[in-house]
Amino acid sequence: MEEKTRVYFQKSTGFICHRYPDHYEPENENDGIEISAEEAEPTYQCPYGKIWAVKDGKPVLIDDEQVINTEEYKAEVKANEIATLKQYLSDTDYVVAKLNELKLEDEAEYEAERAKYSDVLKKRKEARARINELEG
Image (cartoon, rainbow, N blue to C red; front, side):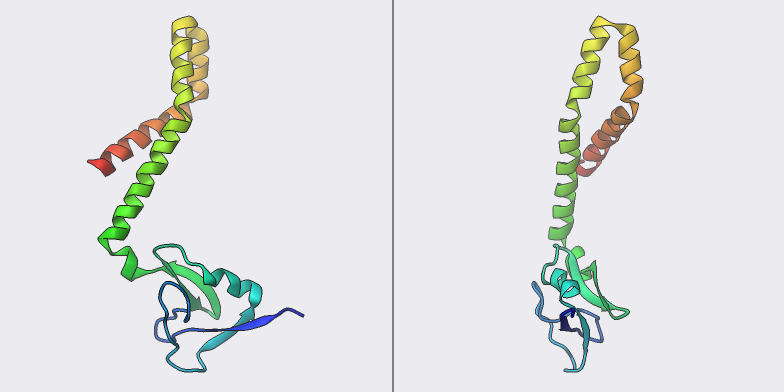
């Protein structure tokens, strides 16, 4: 038999109570739902900028409007995006090196490889433009 657990939430906000980082209290002791322990387990962790709420009788992860509107959160999101884009450029640097070497050695093979990596080259260009936009 599947183990059930009671999860309390605030009816006015939908926010699940007794969860990190915000310790919301139920407005009424009857404001709760019965869900499986398996469904409840993920609600004990919450990514930065998110909050657990009850929608249609189920726990769902939603944006935490109070957090995502702070300058600190916006700065972190921006820094993470820049880091991800720079990592992509680093991970695909081999393509540029390979193409440069082929350009010096064999024009026909260079053109074939350039066509093969056209998507990567396009994404690299977009990544550089986005980094410049974010850092600018």
